[in-house]
Length: 319
Image (tube, rainbow, N blue to C red; front, top):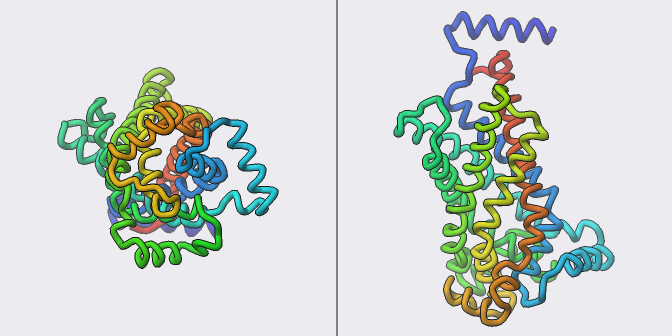
């Protein structure tokens, strides 16, 4: 019966003169769906490490791998296993639209830049490749920033202070003002431009080099993971100090600090904690979680996107 329905659908497509490839609308919807799923899977996997990194980023306590895993263990013993995922609901609310917008807009920016530079349907040269990633990251960050602020607040506070996502929004708006929801926005954008640009650039470049060397159009899943891990490692290392600055500014209202400007925050961090121990605090944790998250994210997106494309071509979806 399933075979009959599939064959009938394909015949219907042919009779109507429709192509087997999905329409631009379906392509955009597919990218949104796959991006949201990829972001959710990746962030859930590394959520305990992400929460631990944020706690160290916003404190003056010295970071070490031993102290990080001690914090994870103590949190588990005191509050239970699920406490390691505190704030993950806010992460999902943020990361699913963020990843969806980022991946979808990246596909669209690649097409626009490819058309503009005369590379329609071909791999983009280095600068447009970097630009497409930067624009995608900037677009996603601009549209979802308040959710990032909420996630940071929930990660560093006890449940008694903020019971859920809406509670964070209400308390911040009432006690600190609506503008607080955008505190740290500038360093976020300044960090996203190199991070997203370098990450997408590195991943796309490695895939291009792989195709040229192996003559295979698509890498295997483990190769995608490796490419994504390299992309995440390079991208996050390049923009990490701005990540520390934005976290300090985002959580200033609950840590008792007065971080108002990017330069002022950097100056205070360097004065009190030093360059390496301050601006790069938690980077080694990022080297562990970042490549894993980016690798899983890119791999999940590519695999699910390819699967949906095959389903379109087999006639399981109407246009």
